[in-house]
Every structure is written in structure tokens, then in C-alpha cells.
Amino acid sequence: MEGIEGHALVKGRVLIGIDVGGTKVLGSALDRSNPAIPLAGHRLDTPDGADAIVDAVTETVRLLQHMLADAGHPPAVAVGVGMPALVTLDGSMRFATHLPEVVDLPMARVLSERLGVPVTLDNDANCAVVAEATIGAAVGRDEVLLVTLGTGIGGGILTGGRLLRGARGFAGEPGHMMVDRKGVACPCGRRGCWERYASGSGLGQLGRDAAAEGRAPAVLGRVDTVADIRGEHVVDAASAGDPGALAVMAEFGWWVAAGLANLVNVLDPEVIVLGGGLVDAGDLLLEPVRSSYDTLTLGGVTNGAPPIVPARLGSGAGAIGAALLADAER
Image 1 (cartoon, one colour):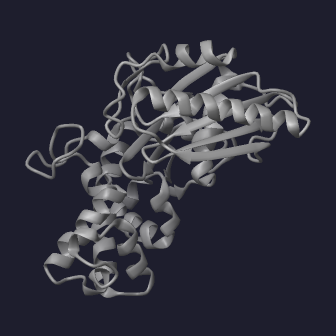
Image 2 (cartoon, rainbow, N blue to C red):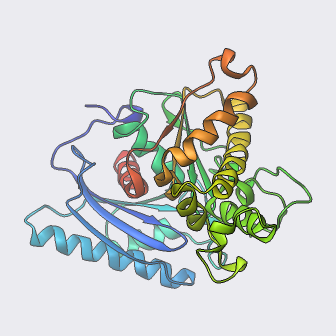
């Protein structure tokens, strides 16, 4: 069995993948030949500060190595770490919108010195697209666009079966395409970024706007005040069939589809994989996205636009892909 870029799935080679997000650090130890089933796992909240994040990743890897030994598995021979950040080609974190205190951190080198094993650092969505192309929703596809819809928006792109990294390693940040120069302020310091409208945070804002205008009373009924409304409250109300919440989901679907259509016009992928926590909403998300997408892509349905499919690996994709990338670097 082959993974992307021709790397064989070798039985008995144990790897560790770490997915660092804005709220959680997820670690997974896996056998290269069957990466979908973890040998060991650990999860903790993401701490504040660069030093604390490095400590958290270090301790997670050490704990997983102990868990492997206790279960009779060989130690992991390499570690991969995915970060929601601009990551340079030499494994340094340059900037992270949702981890603003972490800037210019040579994380791969620091972790490798601490752990005594090779460490590969990459963007978390790059890790996820590698996992989905190897054992998930994009197996057999060489031209893949993966977009993660979570607190923000991440992107991973495969072209010719290889990651598109760009000159500095920063390719794949579609969440910060500007869609409205006078729009909502973004943590990146600009205004009107796509993720302010098409992420979990964006869905929460659309829900608050609708509730404040009296268009989503059932959403407002799930919280104490308009300010408390988050994306999950909109999804819950829509799941119950509330018309106001369903209208918010339709508006949200348009924003997601608008960005996807722009990316398709630039990249022409074979398939779009939607990942991130919002995909758990299933057809409540996918149906309005697909409906708007068909009208927004250049040429519409007559153009044979690439299909939109949900990611298969869920929250584990980032850690799995990080481990696979670490193995590819050896």
C-alpha cells in the first residue's frame, strides 16, 4: 500500500503525531501500516504562551512513549507536529492568528533536542490533507483541496500528489482571503477575512446578528443573552427544524460556498474535502453549501465542478497526518 508522494506504509514502524489547536493538544501514536487505528492517545487543553506549548507537546510525546512501552510496542522513531500557524520550510512557527503569543519559534529543532528523535513541524491543515489523501476521503486523488471549518479556517492543498507549500512554506491560508474590506475585524489584524463569515466563529456572528434582529428567536432561547450565541447554538436549533436557524445556516452555506468557488477557480482540484468541527453538522451544513456552490462556480454545474465531500477522519486527521509527514521526512 502506498501513501501520497510514494511513501510505503511500513508495518511495525511506530510514529507519533501531535495536533496543536487553539483549544486542545491531541497526541496519537500509530503504526505506519495501519495509521487509522491509534496505538495510544492523549489529549489536553492548549496552554498559553510559547514555552508552555512546547512543554505540553514534549510531555505528550513522553507520555505516549511510556504508553507504547507499557503496551509492548516499540518506541516511536519520529514525531510530527501540526500547528495552526504559518510554518517555514525549516520547521519554525512564524505566526499564528489564534496563538498570537507564539512568534518565530524554531519548534522542530527545540523539540528534537528535547526528545532525542527527529521532529517535523507543519501547518495543521497540511497534516490533515495528507491524512485524508492517504487513508481518508481523498484516497487516489492527486489534486485535492481540504478546507477545515473550525474556530477559524485552514487549508491544505495537494497538487500532483504533493503538498503545495509555496516559496516560504506559507501556502494554504484561504481563511484570510479578504472578502469585504469594510467587514468584520479579524484576529489577524485586518478586516473582512473569509473566516470571519465562514468558520465556527462566523456562524456564531451570523446567529447573533439574526437573533438581535428578531429573526432567530429559537437560537436566542438557547442562551441567556445575544452575546452568548455561538455556532453550536445555531446548529442545535437548525437540527430541531427551526426556520430562523435554518435560514442562518443557508446564509452561512453561501459564505462557505463563495470562498470554495473562488478557490476552485484558482486551483481546479479533483475534490474538495471539508473538515473541522463544523462538518459534524452533516447535511445541515453540506446541503446549503452545495446548493450555493453550484451557482457560484465558474460555469456552474455544467462545468463539472469538483465535488464537496466531508472528511472521514474527524478530529484525528491532523495528528495522523503529522505522523505520516514525520515518516516521510526520515
